[in-house]
Amino acid sequence: MLLGLSIAAPVGPIGILCIRRTITLGRLHGFLSGLGAATADAFYGFIAGFGLTLVTGFLLDQKVLLQAVGGLFLIYLGVQTFRSRPATEAAKASGDTLLKSYASTLMLTITNPMTIMSFLGAFAGLGMGGAQSGMAASIALVVGVFAGSALWWLALSFVIGMFRDRIHVSVYRWINRISGVILTIFGLVAIVGLLLGG
Image 1 (cartoon, rainbow, N blue to C red):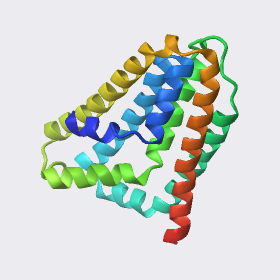
Image 2: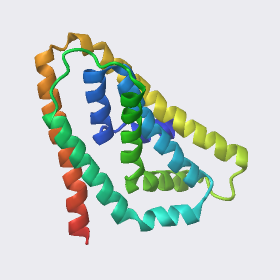
Image 3: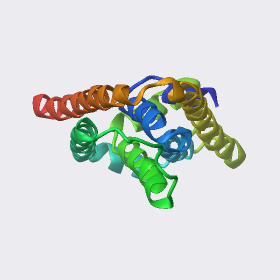
Image 4: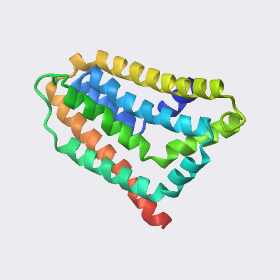
């Protein structure tokens, strides 16, 4: 759980997205956005925990493609966020928009090669995962990673949600603009990193 918590906690593009969605759409959207990231964390935890070297090797071989897709998606989200008009009332929790909140962060986290490297490094450093670990220990590890990550997103969306009603609608426009710029910068950094690395 601590491992999942520590990987989820640093505020990056997913954190910015979760905070923005909590403020503009509500706690459930913010939490489900985080839950998408927690699902991706559990997926990578599963790969590292069960020592699936073939899948891990494939993902690391596709690092450039995954980083490019993730970077472009971040730029798209950033531009859309910057241009979006603040809602005058809370969005209705329809399945479609809740699913989009979940799926978009799942896609962003899955396309981040640093996530799998974080898990591989942490597991190797702690002597966990791999073929030498028992099935029960590996399952407990994956469940713990998911629970720790989900706990972080639940806490973050709950705390940010407490201040939601105190924010005037006019502030939402600035939140959208600042969030949009930050997300776009993260995307540009990913793309520039590819170009400089190549």
